[in-house]
Length: 256
Image 1 (cartoon, rainbow, N blue to C red):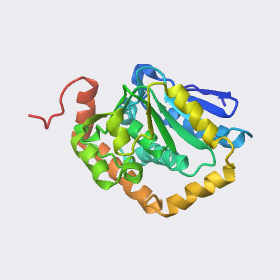
Image 2 (tube, helix red, strand yellow):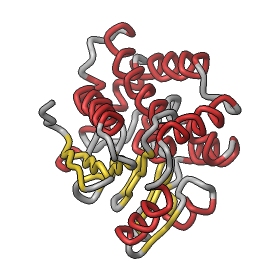
Image 3 (cartoon, rainbow, N blue to C red):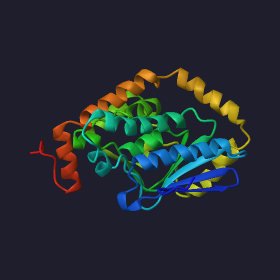
Protein backbone atom coordinates (compact mmCIF):
# COMPACT_ATOMS: atom_id res chain seq x y z
CA UNK A 1 0.00 0.00 0.00
CA UNK A 2 0.99 3.66 -0.32
CA UNK A 3 1.84 5.14 3.09
CA UNK A 4 0.93 8.77 3.72
CA UNK A 5 1.83 9.21 7.40
CA UNK A 6 4.76 6.79 7.59
CA UNK A 7 8.04 6.12 5.85
CA UNK A 8 8.45 2.35 5.40
CA UNK A 9 11.71 0.97 4.03
CA UNK A 10 13.45 -2.38 4.21
CA UNK A 11 17.18 -2.67 4.76
CA UNK A 12 18.30 -6.29 4.85
CA UNK A 13 16.59 -7.89 7.84
CA UNK A 14 15.02 -4.70 9.24
CA UNK A 15 11.80 -2.98 8.23
CA UNK A 16 12.25 0.66 9.26
CA UNK A 17 8.97 2.42 10.04
CA UNK A 18 9.16 6.16 10.71
CA UNK A 19 6.25 8.23 12.01
CA UNK A 20 6.13 11.23 9.68
CA UNK A 21 3.89 13.92 11.13
CA UNK A 22 6.56 16.08 12.78
CA UNK A 23 4.41 19.20 12.45
CA UNK A 24 1.92 17.49 14.81
CA UNK A 25 4.63 15.89 16.99
CA UNK A 26 3.85 12.57 15.32
CA UNK A 27 0.43 12.42 16.99
CA UNK A 28 -1.62 9.36 16.10
CA UNK A 29 -4.63 9.66 13.82
CA UNK A 30 -6.83 6.79 12.68
CA UNK A 31 -5.01 6.85 9.33
CA UNK A 32 -1.62 6.53 11.00
CA UNK A 33 -2.83 3.71 13.24
CA UNK A 34 -4.21 1.84 10.23
CA UNK A 35 -0.93 2.36 8.38
CA UNK A 36 1.03 1.02 11.36
CA UNK A 37 -1.11 -2.11 11.23
CA UNK A 38 -0.34 -2.36 7.51
CA UNK A 39 3.39 -1.91 8.11
CA UNK A 40 3.30 -4.76 10.62
CA UNK A 41 1.51 -6.86 7.99
CA UNK A 42 4.41 -6.18 5.62
CA UNK A 43 7.00 -7.13 8.25
CA UNK A 44 5.23 -10.40 8.99
CA UNK A 45 4.75 -11.27 5.32
CA UNK A 46 8.23 -10.52 3.97
CA UNK A 47 10.61 -13.44 4.25
CA UNK A 48 13.84 -12.61 6.04
CA UNK A 49 12.55 -9.60 7.99
CA UNK A 50 13.37 -10.10 11.65
CA UNK A 51 12.87 -6.63 13.13
CA UNK A 52 10.33 -3.86 12.74
CA UNK A 53 12.08 -0.73 14.01
CA UNK A 54 9.71 2.10 14.90
CA UNK A 55 11.02 5.65 15.17
CA UNK A 56 9.72 9.19 14.81
CA UNK A 57 10.78 12.02 12.51
CA UNK A 58 11.80 15.25 14.22
CA UNK A 59 12.17 16.08 17.89
CA UNK A 60 9.25 13.92 19.08
CA UNK A 61 8.97 10.16 18.85
CA UNK A 62 5.19 10.24 19.36
CA UNK A 63 2.86 12.47 21.37
CA UNK A 64 -0.04 10.03 21.55
CA UNK A 65 -3.49 10.48 20.07
CA UNK A 66 -4.07 13.56 17.96
CA UNK A 67 -6.32 15.77 20.09
CA UNK A 68 -7.66 17.59 17.03
CA UNK A 69 -8.56 14.25 15.48
CA UNK A 70 -10.13 13.00 18.72
CA UNK A 71 -12.04 16.25 19.35
CA UNK A 72 -13.36 16.04 15.81
CA UNK A 73 -15.24 12.83 16.57
CA UNK A 74 -19.00 13.07 16.22
CA UNK A 75 -19.52 13.11 19.97
CA UNK A 76 -20.72 9.56 20.53
CA UNK A 77 -19.08 6.34 21.57
CA UNK A 78 -19.82 4.54 18.31
CA UNK A 79 -17.76 7.04 16.30
CA UNK A 80 -14.85 7.09 18.75
CA UNK A 81 -14.46 3.49 19.86
CA UNK A 82 -13.16 2.07 16.55
CA UNK A 83 -10.11 4.36 16.63
CA UNK A 84 -9.35 3.55 20.27
CA UNK A 85 -9.82 -0.16 19.62
CA UNK A 86 -7.50 0.05 16.59
CA UNK A 87 -4.80 1.68 18.73
CA UNK A 88 -5.18 -0.87 21.51
CA UNK A 89 -5.15 -3.63 18.92
CA UNK A 90 -1.91 -2.28 17.46
CA UNK A 91 -0.13 -2.44 20.82
CA UNK A 92 -1.56 -5.90 21.39
CA UNK A 93 -0.21 -7.01 18.02
CA UNK A 94 3.25 -5.76 19.00
CA UNK A 95 3.13 -8.23 21.91
CA UNK A 96 2.05 -11.20 19.76
CA UNK A 97 3.66 -10.68 16.33
CA UNK A 98 6.21 -13.14 14.95
CA UNK A 99 8.30 -10.05 14.08
CA UNK A 100 10.38 -8.52 16.85
CA UNK A 101 9.25 -4.91 17.38
CA UNK A 102 11.87 -2.38 18.46
CA UNK A 103 11.05 1.14 19.64
CA UNK A 104 13.96 3.31 18.53
CA UNK A 105 13.48 6.50 20.54
CA UNK A 106 15.46 9.61 19.70
CA UNK A 107 12.81 12.21 20.56
CA UNK A 108 10.40 13.13 23.34
CA UNK A 109 7.62 10.63 24.16
CA UNK A 110 4.25 11.50 25.70
CA UNK A 111 0.86 9.89 26.34
CA UNK A 112 0.03 7.14 23.83
CA UNK A 113 3.57 7.31 22.51
CA UNK A 114 4.62 5.80 25.83
CA UNK A 115 2.23 2.96 25.03
CA UNK A 116 4.02 2.21 21.77
CA UNK A 117 7.30 1.99 23.68
CA UNK A 118 5.80 -0.13 26.46
CA UNK A 119 4.24 -2.58 23.99
CA UNK A 120 7.45 -3.03 22.01
CA UNK A 121 9.64 -6.09 22.52
CA UNK A 122 12.78 -4.01 22.99
CA UNK A 123 13.20 -0.27 23.50
CA UNK A 124 16.37 1.65 22.73
CA UNK A 125 16.47 5.29 23.81
CA UNK A 126 18.97 8.04 23.18
CA UNK A 127 20.30 9.44 26.44
CA UNK A 128 18.69 12.88 25.98
CA UNK A 129 15.03 11.83 25.52
CA UNK A 130 12.17 12.08 28.03
CA UNK A 131 8.93 10.22 28.71
CA UNK A 132 5.63 11.49 30.15
CA UNK A 133 2.16 10.03 30.70
CA UNK A 134 0.34 13.35 30.40
CA UNK A 135 -3.30 12.23 30.08
CA UNK A 136 -4.51 13.30 33.54
CA UNK A 137 -3.55 16.89 32.74
CA UNK A 138 -6.46 16.92 30.26
CA UNK A 139 -8.87 14.92 32.41
CA UNK A 140 -8.16 11.72 30.47
CA UNK A 141 -7.07 8.27 31.58
CA UNK A 142 -4.09 6.40 30.10
CA UNK A 143 -6.43 3.44 29.82
CA UNK A 144 -5.14 1.89 26.62
CA UNK A 145 -1.53 2.41 27.69
CA UNK A 146 -1.93 1.13 31.25
CA UNK A 147 -1.99 -2.65 30.60
CA UNK A 148 1.25 -2.44 28.64
CA UNK A 149 2.87 -0.09 31.16
CA UNK A 150 1.96 -2.44 34.01
CA UNK A 151 3.30 -5.36 31.99
CA UNK A 152 6.63 -3.59 31.52
CA UNK A 153 7.10 -1.56 34.69
CA UNK A 154 4.83 -3.00 37.37
CA UNK A 155 1.66 -1.61 38.94
CA UNK A 156 3.07 1.12 41.20
CA UNK A 157 5.49 2.63 38.69
CA UNK A 158 2.74 2.76 36.06
CA UNK A 159 0.26 4.26 38.54
CA UNK A 160 2.75 6.85 39.81
CA UNK A 161 3.60 8.08 36.32
CA UNK A 162 -0.12 8.18 35.44
CA UNK A 163 -1.07 10.06 38.61
CA UNK A 164 1.72 12.64 38.59
CA UNK A 165 2.17 13.10 34.82
CA UNK A 166 5.84 13.40 35.76
CA UNK A 167 8.36 13.69 32.95
CA UNK A 168 11.25 11.27 33.40
CA UNK A 169 14.56 11.03 31.59
CA UNK A 170 15.89 8.01 29.72
CA UNK A 171 17.95 6.75 32.66
CA UNK A 172 14.93 6.77 34.94
CA UNK A 173 12.85 5.08 32.23
CA UNK A 174 15.50 2.39 32.07
CA UNK A 175 15.52 1.99 35.85
CA UNK A 176 11.78 1.22 35.93
CA UNK A 177 11.94 -1.08 32.90
CA UNK A 178 10.19 1.12 30.34
CA UNK A 179 13.40 1.26 28.29
CA UNK A 180 15.71 -1.71 27.77
CA UNK A 181 18.81 0.18 26.69
CA UNK A 182 19.97 3.80 26.90
CA UNK A 183 22.63 4.60 24.33
CA UNK A 184 24.69 7.59 23.28
CA UNK A 185 25.03 5.77 19.93
CA UNK A 186 21.52 4.28 19.36
CA UNK A 187 22.32 2.97 15.87
CA UNK A 188 25.17 0.87 17.27
CA UNK A 189 22.88 -0.46 19.98
CA UNK A 190 20.36 -1.44 17.30
CA UNK A 191 23.07 -3.23 15.31
CA UNK A 192 24.09 -5.25 18.36
CA UNK A 193 20.50 -6.19 19.12
CA UNK A 194 19.94 -7.36 15.53
CA UNK A 195 22.94 -9.69 15.81
CA UNK A 196 21.35 -11.28 18.89
CA UNK A 197 17.91 -11.90 17.39
CA UNK A 198 18.50 -12.24 13.63
CA UNK A 199 18.77 -16.03 13.71
CA UNK A 200 15.66 -16.63 15.81
CA UNK A 201 12.85 -18.59 14.19
CA UNK A 202 9.79 -16.31 13.78
CA UNK A 203 7.48 -19.11 14.87
CA UNK A 204 9.43 -19.49 18.08
CA UNK A 205 9.31 -15.73 18.63
CA UNK A 206 5.51 -15.74 18.26
CA UNK A 207 5.15 -18.67 20.66
CA UNK A 208 7.46 -17.02 23.18
CA UNK A 209 5.37 -13.84 23.09
CA UNK A 210 2.19 -15.90 23.40
CA UNK A 211 3.55 -17.75 26.41
CA UNK A 212 4.33 -14.54 28.27
CA UNK A 213 1.01 -12.99 27.23
CA UNK A 214 -0.89 -15.96 28.68
CA UNK A 215 0.94 -15.43 31.96
CA UNK A 216 -0.13 -11.77 32.24
CA UNK A 217 -3.17 -9.48 32.23
CA UNK A 218 -3.53 -8.46 28.58
CA UNK A 219 -6.69 -10.24 27.41
CA UNK A 220 -10.11 -9.51 25.93
CA UNK A 221 -11.50 -8.22 29.23
CA UNK A 222 -8.53 -5.86 29.62
CA UNK A 223 -9.23 -4.50 26.14
CA UNK A 224 -12.92 -3.94 26.93
CA UNK A 225 -12.20 -2.10 30.18
CA UNK A 226 -9.49 0.07 28.58
CA UNK A 227 -11.55 1.10 25.54
CA UNK A 228 -14.67 1.88 27.57
CA UNK A 229 -12.75 3.89 30.17
CA UNK A 230 -10.97 6.20 27.74
CA UNK A 231 -14.04 6.58 25.52
CA UNK A 232 -16.11 7.66 28.52
CA UNK A 233 -13.54 10.27 29.57
CA UNK A 234 -13.03 11.71 26.08
CA UNK A 235 -16.78 12.21 25.75
CA UNK A 236 -17.03 14.10 29.06
CA UNK A 237 -17.85 17.78 28.33
CA UNK A 238 -15.11 18.97 30.73
CA UNK A 239 -12.55 16.84 28.95
CA UNK A 240 -13.61 18.18 25.56
CA UNK A 241 -13.09 21.70 26.90
CA UNK A 242 -9.69 20.74 28.30
CA UNK A 243 -8.65 19.41 24.89
CA UNK A 244 -9.74 22.70 23.31
CA UNK A 245 -7.81 24.64 25.98
CA UNK A 246 -4.73 22.55 25.22
CA UNK A 247 -5.01 23.32 21.51
CA UNK A 248 -5.30 27.02 22.40
CA UNK A 249 -2.34 26.86 24.87
CA UNK A 250 -4.60 27.57 27.85
CA UNK A 251 -4.92 25.79 31.20
CA UNK A 252 -7.83 23.36 31.78
CA UNK A 253 -10.81 24.95 33.54
CA UNK A 254 -10.33 22.93 36.78
CA UNK A 255 -6.87 24.39 37.42
CA UNK A 256 -6.87 27.27 39.88
